[in-house]
Image 1 (cartoon, helix red, strand yellow):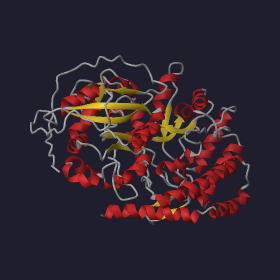
Image 2 (cartoon, helix red, strand yellow):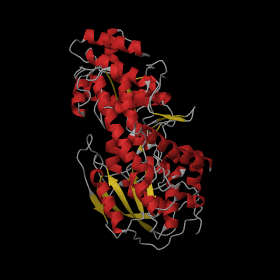
Image 3 (cartoon, helix red, strand yellow):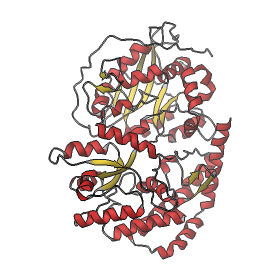
Image 4 (cartoon, helix red, strand yellow):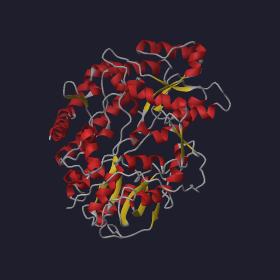
Length: 538
């Protein structure tokens, strides 16, 4: 196996104006398409050597990779994207791209895997397919080739703890860890700062202050429900983010975990049966009973929630930080004082902290087919994506072409005021065209209010909970005992919060959860994470 040593180069390309029309607002609906469809695993070049030129592209000869990627509904794939031409100029790489809308991607992936003919590269959102197909031999184990990827190796050595979240149960790393795009998932407490100022209220810092603020908002706006949650990915998702403020944790199947991990003690515990969790539920039940919490918080959809906030029927919520710009930009057309702002998380319980469960998380990245006939070239290309140059170009495009740069280094887009517009018109920062995602590119489309909120919110991050990978035996426990416990707990928590089950039965509820096999579920968390720790030490 030959080793590729890639020299960094800053290739100043000739300016090429993007001719795509600027889209107005977020695109809706799902899209699918295919560009230059070719047989999976095919390539136009049998071998291409890495360029030794300081000013030339990555490869001295053209090389073509087949690639399967998801197509995002808000910026569906286009085969004439700016980023495709950009990659070709700086690397000499062409693509045979098959793009499938995100809703249909899993089906397409499974069909592709069943065919036995895989493209060179597949970009995966999540790790379910990685865990399923990687141990079967479908993808290369990246760690076997790390020495021929100097940029990736340097990144991996600096970010090993983060990379362990991408490990499979067999100890292999099949997916190149993406880093940065998860910032788009960052959430936090948001509130109507203008209403608070109107009423002379301060942002609350603890449970008592939080309750007092809600009462005063209700007194000033009798028809309101001052606190609103939105039902996305399950209404109880909010509790996962809030629970640490009460000194506990909640189930997070997005991290493949049902228990919470304490890094200080090295112990796993089940939050929803803890005294702290009971205290949290009692508090929200009180708010519900007193009309301080939106009554349909378990079922309200996004549109309904938006209306509640816009109509000043609720004043405090949890959601994506980008909602600051979403509401302020639209509402200030009729109400110039309308101010949706970030609120630091209160420390609610005695054991709680003024922190927020880490919400800027995700598992994304390329896998490489074990069938590829162009392994060296594929690895060299991905290694370029982990380089400073690769990250810079795949965030901002050619130097000074799409952006302006101030004397202090601050950049702004010349033609884009919304991230969706920038992505749809250029393909920059879209699935399949990044590995290290520089969120500064997206932040450049935000207002100063939203950028400041993002910076502030990072100060309240807790350490990310481990993302676990289960072997076949452990997965069986998750699929049976784990899901049974999750379903039961969600049902009972809803009943406690709505007053349909008395807190006098809490001990009985704990016994009911334990009887479902909680000890077995805890054991597989311990065994799975033990492999992670062993991999870290290795």
